[in-house]
Every structure is written in C-alpha cells, then in structure tokens.
Length: 346
Image (cartoon, rainbow, N blue to C red; front, side, top):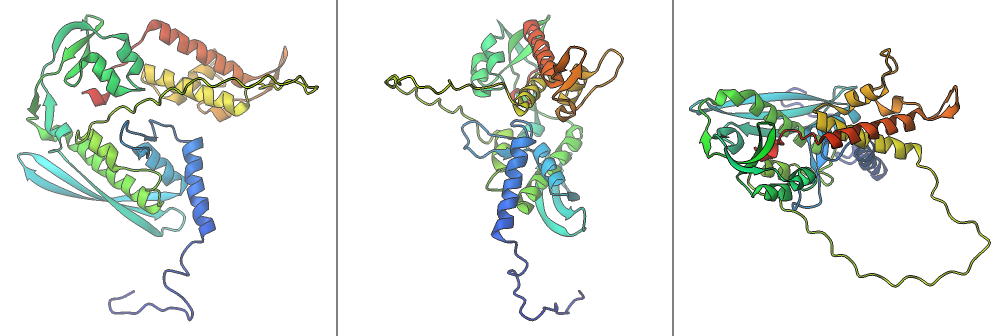
C-alpha cells in the first residue's frame, strides 16, 4: 500500500474481530504447546526451572527452536553493532518470524548482549588448591541441587579441578578484566540472537504464561542467586484403614510396563549416558542398537520395534535395548566417571 492510500475494507468487516481466532483454536494452540513440552521437550534441555525462582520454567534456545519447527516459523535477524570503546561491543538484535508456508510476517522479538556483561567482561584468575578432595555429595547433587553441591565445596568462590588424576577442591582466583574482548565477540553475538529469538517465539505463540525468559538471564548474569526449594514437611503417619472383608473379586494387578513406559525409561538412561560421556542421546542409542556388522543402528527410539519374531519366538527389541542401556549405565556408575565442571560454577 502506497503512502497516503487507504485500506479497502469490505462492508460489515470489523477490524481486529473478523481476523481474530476463535477460543477453540486458541485452546488448540495452548494444548499443542503443552503436548510438545510433554512428548518432545526435556526438562533441563529445552526448558528448565530455576530453584527458588518460581514455578514457571524458562524457555531455552533448544525449546524455542522446537516451537519454531512445530509452528513452521522461519526466524530472520537484524543485527546492530554498538561500539562501546576499549574493544567492547553491544549487539542489538531483532528477530522476525515468518510463516514458512505463506511467508506471512508473524511477529518479532528483541534482545541484546554486550561484552560488558559480567560473565564476559571478567575472567577468573589462577586457582589455588585447598588440599581437600571433592566429596561424593558434590557429584550426587551437582545436577539435582546445584546450590547444595556448591555448599559441599565450601560455598561461593570454590570449584573443582583434576590434579594428578584426583578431583580436588580449589579456591577460585580473583576476577580480572579480559584484555581482549574480541575473544568473545561471536559468543556474545549468538547470545543476543538467542535472546531475541526466544522473545519472538514467546510473543508469536502467546506462550509467556507458560514460559519465562528473564529469570534465566538474571541468574546467568549473577543478578540473582538461585536458592534451594525447601522440601515439604513429612506428613504424620495416618491410621491404616480397617481390613476389608474378603470378596470373590480377583486381586488387582499392576501389569507389565507399557510401550510408552519403556520408551521413557530408555530416553532417560540414554540422556544420562550422553551427559557422562559428553555425547548426545542419538549417538548413544545408535551404539546400543548397531550390530557387529554395522547394521540396524537407530538414532531415535521410535525406530526400535516393540515386538518381533525370532528363532526363540516372540520377543521385544525395545525391552532388550533398555536392558542393555541399564547395563551400560551401571558400568559408568561403577567406573565413577566424573565429567568436567558445569558452566555455572566457572
């Protein structure tokens, strides 16, 4: 439409009303997001809750990418670079989402990142060993409760380092300013793009009531410190119900695990193995399923058969792979393999 031209409106057309989606369609969209969270996304990978910072999960970049794929949205980025002096930069990013099928503009989001942010402006100086080895409580709680894990080391300012093949507690050095901010230009740019895309996805899918974004950034930048959530008090023992008179009805049975139960267990164990080996779940699953001739390797759980007929009759390949995965995870636990420190400690 040219400047000064008026939009042509059909008789009876009500702006903002006739273009609106129905409540039923809105419910379908919310339900779709919730189903994607339940069926596809993984807590801690695609979204995650910050302990002590509320019940609403933060949408992470992999989760935003999954929603883009689900709703067939194509992100495009406009980037502005601001020179802040002494080699420092700020990247201001605008992410616009377009419908892949129609090319229609759906909405946009903004985000920025700067080399002046604390986690990129400063680096940690040389560490000093405390002479104490890392306690087992740290490794047990490192992912489930990072705050308690940090307390096991001595609190803030302490980390871990492998010295002569032994994991030791070390005292972190003083923060010193980076002498070359250009080392993190690419990292900061990608962070700005991530923030803009997450903002755009939350805006275009109207999912801000399901996810949040700001809490994750505040924790990353050290503005707020996550606190552990207190465990609920143990309820007093209740009086056991009176014994029921015997009936002719057969006893209830829980039955065998369902196919979905087996898939969920396999996904969890493959994720644990991947974390320990610094790999990915698809590669772990492939190595579990490939045979000695290099055949039949699967990278997705859905590609594994539930039932098959073999020389000994009917059997379940999915259950067999789950059993193999459990054995592999047990070996890793017995080896007491400890991965490197997570980024949040450094």
